[in-house]
Length: 257
Length: 234
Image 1: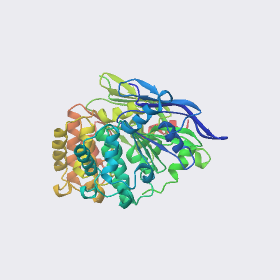
Image 2: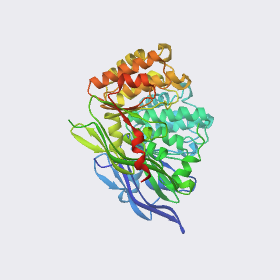
Image 3: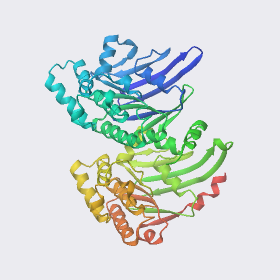
Image 4: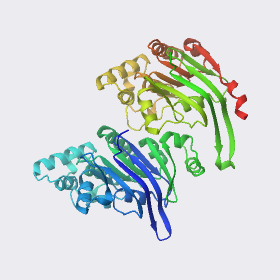
């Protein structure tokens, strides 16, 4: 097996006396979707921030295989290097679109900004790629000059996806991307995420409290409770034959649709 | 000749932590194998553990004891211990699983569902498209339904999409859990024919068919699962 794209070893982070993340090991590679599930307060979002290098761990490390093939510890990257990584090779789709988008800037501008961050300066090419990506996430070309403040919740999430994928990232982190959306809007978004991640061979880490989302999108799953990963494995195995008492409780608490 | 699938002294039980840790034994001492060209049908009443055996072979259920060897080209892999990535790779290349139910993917058309399964199984885009059309036509799914998502289809129509999805690629090991439960006689006959073609091409089948006509049409051997029940209390 080749080196994973991203791997975390023994990641630990405490807020005061409370362990938000305790000794977490995980890895993900290209073409793979890993779901992190658990209830609110289980440490999922802290883990995602640690993986993204937004938070520094108290101990443990996150390694990332750079485009030149070398694995680097995120803690050893300078702030400029880390920023460049986040702007080009990584995507981060936020639960709250207002954190992931510039609400007052046009949809096309939101997508184009990431390209400009990579050094693209040609207006026509930027606009062309922005239009292409809006089309791929099913946003009409006629909305390219509208700001996301005028978009529905589902459209904002699709715009976030376009903004993140336009630079051809290898890793995309998603924090509850479908929560708060109507069920039909959710289905459309899930379908889009599923299709694009498979087509582009992305490594995806998705945090969700919704087991149905995890089942539909992910290959592997990690179940978190009180900052620890208590069960991990093939998504369908963990959901259909859960081993840990807490996973059994989670699975049995879901209404079958 | 190396078997495609071998259960070696396999045991399975469920521990219900939410019911005070009650242990429900399912099967014990399971040893059986499936050779190329063979269709081994699991017999026995509901609850005897037939589906659990198929799910263990697919890696969907954990296996408490013993080994489940699956042949992958020149090597054999114990799926009871396999890493999730190895299991996913086996599923894409080696093991096909067809259950009674189609887990519906919203908004994806029947034809695309089948085609995608072909591509995941290693077929080229053109080959996947061609085979998907041929299979759906052979299974008598009306062409006007092909471009629609299967969510609104009848049980029998969904089941035929599911069969097409499971059989489109050339995987050597087929796990079939009542794939014909809601099909009429003529469509069951089509499925029997498809299964026999797979067997003739050297695939092996481990299956569950309650319908005796279907069973007689494809089975080369029947294994009564109730004999694995005695050991399960142990």
